[in-house]
Image (cartoon, rainbow, N blue to C red; front, side, top):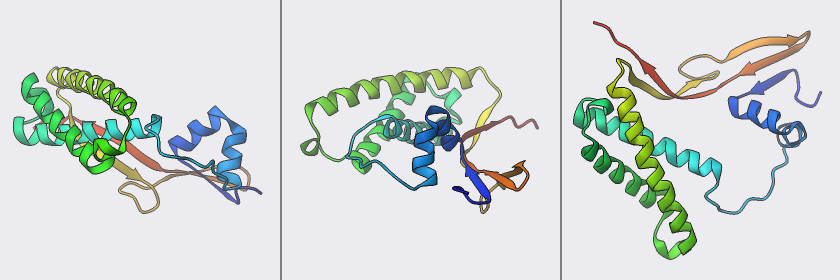
Length: 171
């Protein structure tokens, strides 16, 4: 049994399996990984989006009473601050990146401003508010993992993190 008695899955692992079963087996069954240099590709772009959205939502709650209550210009200022913090913390100075990198990053920055404004519009029309971020459901998480038997003698454990949990509080 390549994976042992318990197959441990996350949403990312299920997506990887659906994309390429052989790649999944090589990575998670045999423990092989492709050598990787630094690039700002899909996983890094996703991390950037998560960082900005979470930072903006937290600050908007503190400064405006919620992202849906922020004026567009105030929200743009908040977004700019969070993006600049990300650059300082994770990317570094211009001396270490090419002009092409910064050109592509500026395109990404513009798209994030648009997405944050769309979030503001969505929450301004809703009674829901972001309640939690990166909610862990795993063996030691805030919520427990989801365990089931897929076949006789084959246990599956599904765990991971929920990016954002929205809720509605009604007094």
